[in-house]
Each structure stands twice: as structure tokens, then as C-alpha cells.
Image 1 (cartoon, helix red, strand yellow):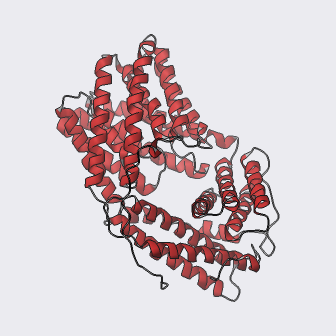
Image 2 (cartoon, rainbow, N blue to C red):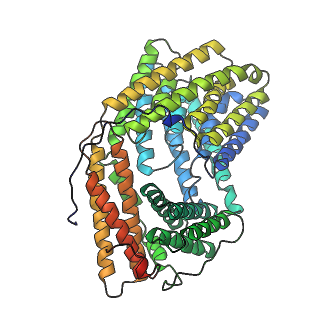
Image 3 (cartoon, one colour):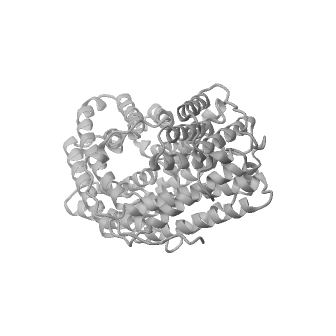
Length: 558
């Protein structure tokens, strides 16, 4: 380990943000993909049930249809495997809930099981890094099923409906591969090029971190894509050019940024991938990608490491368990007929740290309350005809995915009426009761859930920073040793560069997460800054050694 200073400082006291969490962001560049997928995956089983006059079974097919929301950032080969895991995970949670509901009517037991499931789903989703929409969909389905009247003999048939709808979701999510096999890889590469262009145009800590993260994500996507193809090889070269932009500042920053943006535009389009000439001195082929792809493994080992005692994920799971249980019990005590809504509200709040959880609390509360008003407005029309009900649910499902990337609260405005309308498939309920229960559940779930986030501290977040700091220094030492070799192999340099890039991304994420905790040990922020600066200098040195940039461009010594 290098002799980096490890002086620490206590994070400054932060103001509680009120307006910032509610600001709208730019929509995701692929918002329409999950939105379209979930509509198609939901419409098919819903219309089948409509033709059979069994819309009362929609809740079970909906569990499988919602699986179509996952994996849209993944290459299709990885997406296929991931969605199998998502469907099986959904099936397992639903099975536990349905069997429990068939064996007991005790509200106390049902709430306890719901809280345990929510905590387990949160832990597993964080450990597997499944990505959006995370554990909330699993918790919504399993919690609702707990409070649905059930007979033991009905459970296999209901699970079969979920499995069938899950199979439809799998087919819908993979269907675009027939048209554009490398679509996810092209989008990830385009993001890396655009992020690199933003850094070239406006150098700074924020733009550099965003560009490094985007380049790292692009490499991970390409490595997960499966066997090499000519298109993927061209994409790999484009990512190398994005890395080059991070290693040195050229003579014409504006022109370099425009060129990167143009490559990104062409990469994202349906036309051929741009094929810029390799930088002087680089190999025609990127041997390091093939070597690293062949050597990839240890996924299960990494998962077990994230779940091991001492993991910083465990306190967040404990927050989820305590917050969901308390929210459910308090709602039950005040007479709410559907305490699972409070469980889901509390479960949806828990993010990587307390600051982000506070942001989500504001967003969830505002979105749900506005969504209740929307539900009250559309309910009379939705009750006019079964097809109208199906149409409204599909519309709100699409709107939720279209809006949620702009801000979570905006998506919640659409999610809330959709969740309430799903209850109508099993029969009408008094509108005033539904609205009153949902408002009460939202307020209690949000308040109690956030209180649990504050009271259950996560001091292990600082330990994660220290571990990430050590890993970054080890990765840098390895890169320096590789550079010191008389004639390092291109594969070794590529692998060392990507390992160092990944460790710097992990270090920045760990530091940002720990900085958002309100109660914690001192953070080694000076050491983190020094490690980041040294790491980026070493990355520039590897680019110089490989001939990606000229020696005169390299900023600083190794």
C-alpha cells in the first residue's frame, strides 16, 4: 500500500434538502423500453383473462408481468439469465406469501412475514445489484398477496399463472434482440462517449467522475455481452477513445468534444458503428477484453462476500425490517384495513444512505398523495367497463415508467392510481375507504420508515470506504508494476487499466454513500482524494505506455 495520508475529517453538518429532491431531471435515454415492455407483458395475460371472464386473477399474472421492468440496461445474453432469476425470485416471494395467507389470518403474523420478506428482498437486490426498479416491485407483490384471502389448494394454480406471465415477460424483454442484437452495448458505449465529451468540454471533478463511471459501465456491458462480434469489437475501440479523452486534454477541446458526441450519435442510431482509426501505437485488436472475458468468474463468490457478516448492506436491511414492521403494526392499530400499503411505502424509502432515504421520503409522500387525487378522478370512468379498467391500468403503467426517470415523485403519481385500480379487478371497494386508507398508509409508512432509517445507524459505510481505498491503492500498485515491466503485454495493460478504473468508481461510490449517512465515524476524505488523483495519473500513464496518447500529453508522473 502506498504512503497516502490517512488524515480524516468529520463530515460537515448538512441542511435537510427540501426543494432539490423534487426537481425534475432529464428523462432517461431509454425510458420507452421498460414502459413499452411492461405494457405489452401486462396486456397479453390481462386480455386472455378478460376473454375467460376471470379478471379476478389479474393480481397473480401481474406479478409475472412486472418482471418485464428489469434488466433493460443489460446485454441480451445477460438479460436472459437475469430475468430467469427475477421470475424465480418473484415466484418464491409470492409462494411464501400465498402459503402464509392460506395458513393464518393473524394480522400480526402477516405483517411480520411481510417485513421479513421486504428486508430479504432489499438485501438480495442490493447484493446482486439488480438495478431499477429494485426490490419495491417484489415487496409490492408479496405484501399484497399476504392480505389476499387464499386457500391452500389454490396456491399451485395461482403460482402457475405468475410463472406463465413471467415467461411472457421474458419473451417480451428479449424480443428486441431479433432486431438489434447489440442495442444495449451500443447505448452503453454512446453514454461513455457523451460523458467523455462533457468532461473534455468542461473539465472538473464532477464531469470526470461521471465520465469514468460511464466508461467503466461500458466495459462491464461489453464484457457481459457474450462472444465477440465485429460490432462489439468496434464498440470496444470507441470506449478506448473515450478513455483517451479522460487521460489527456488535446489541442482542440471543442473539436474533440464535438467528435465524441458525433460518434455517440452514430453509435446510438441504427446505422453502422463508427470505426475511427486506432490511436498511433495501439494494437489493431484489444487483446485485453478477450482475455478478461475468458477469465471472468467469481460472481457467486462476490455475492457471498456482499452478504457476509460485516457487510454495509446489512444495516440497510435491518432498517427495512424494523421500518416495515413498525409501519404495518401502527397502521393496523389505527384501523387501516390494508396495512401492506404501509409496508410497501416504508420499504420503498430505503436507499444507500439516510440522505437519499430522506429524498425518497419526500418524493414518495408527494407522489402518492397526488396519485390518490388522480385515482379519485378516474375511478368513476374505470368502473364503467372492464376494458376501461384494463386500459387505465395499462396507461398508468406506461406513464409510471415514462415519468419515473425524471423524478421518483412524478412516477409515483402514476403508480398510485394503478396500484389502487388493480384492486378493482377482484371487485369494487368503497372509494372513500380506499382513498382514506391510502393517505393514512402513506403518511404513517413514510414517517415511521424514515424514523427507522435515522435510528438504525450504518457505521459500516465508513468501513466500506476504507476497504475501497485499500483496493484502489492495490489496483494502482498493480498498474504501476505492470508499467514497470520492460515490455508489458497489451492484455496485461488493458486488464490493469480496467481494474484500476473499476476500483476508482467503487471508491467514489463508497465515499458518496458514507458521506450521506447522518451518524458515522470520521471519513478519510483526504486519503480518498489523494488516491483518486494518483489513480487518474496512473491511468494516464497506462494510456501513454500503450501509445493511446503521446507522452507529452500525459499529465503528471505515475
